[in-house]
Image (cartoon, rainbow, N blue to C red; front, side):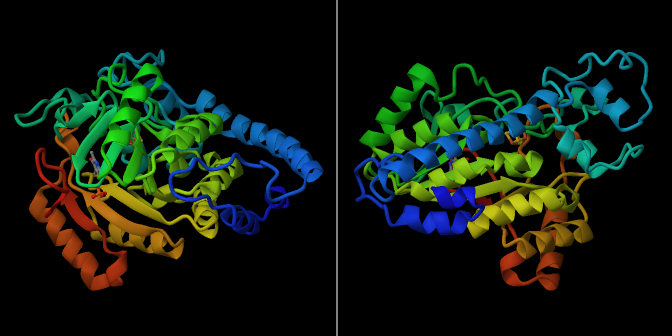
Length: 381
Ligand SMILES: *Cc1c(COP(=O)(O)O)cnc(C)c1O
Ligand code: SF4
């Protein structure tokens, strides 16, 4: 792993990859001494540890410094403080607290209440609207739970809710009311989830979701991976995460190296809705993943006032493919209570995607889908 310290993750990965273990056996831990000599290994372990600590301090510091109230967010962006918000309390967050890392807030335009990034995170009075058809569990997740924190809806893949924590709170989140405390695969629950995975050999892909699995530390992530690696029929891990977008320093060498050392193939699916989310640091973090041999896909949610515009979507997709990130899905909004004001009419969504098809290479056009409870896959629209 020494090469990582010289800043060359790619070379490090090749060394790690030659260490592949046969399917079914847990992989050896990093730096087990089989590839490098003993002394080198110890030296490397020490420097990797201190580097890991620095890396962790970075992104965890960003989580600590994040903006946590609508008042604070408004002040930060020089927006008018309307009555009742000036004290920075969470009075109007509708039970879903504001959480915005400063890195993300820095990509917003100060003084613009309609900024597309701000709209994703600032609570509005419209959240109190609750039209028919909008509910707390719009995609039937609670029915798809096969163990605490484990959803098995689709053939061959199961989704683990690893944590309830996220690196940002998106107002349109379909899990904004999800009862995480009873339904995440942590602690005692984890054993039950692992048992289900072990006993169902049709599952070859485990999706790590949440919340956001990358709010866990690299140590926790490594432990979780080790447990999944011990299940012979699982071949792939899919990381569903918004962290590389909102706090790009979370793309640590420790995480990358651990993925490369695994017998499991990792795919990363990030979540970015607007081209302004992709600043240079985020772009660099995504490229580091791709350079390290990890395929990266993007999913976006179609959101009124954010990206319901063909030029915006085109520019998002173009920027993504320039970074070698594949646009995967464009999701029709899940009808979660509090998010009705974000909904874009399906016809309008279809028209946007067909305009994209006339402007972009085929591989740059995301599939427009929605999630329907009880279906065998996401539904193409
Ligand atoms: C979306 C989703 C998946 C993954 O679906 P893909 O079409 O393979 O991306 C898996 N499990 C659950 C519960 C999901 O919601
Ligand atoms: S990062 Fe994902 S899970 Fe977390 S609040 Fe945003 S949409 Fe929801």
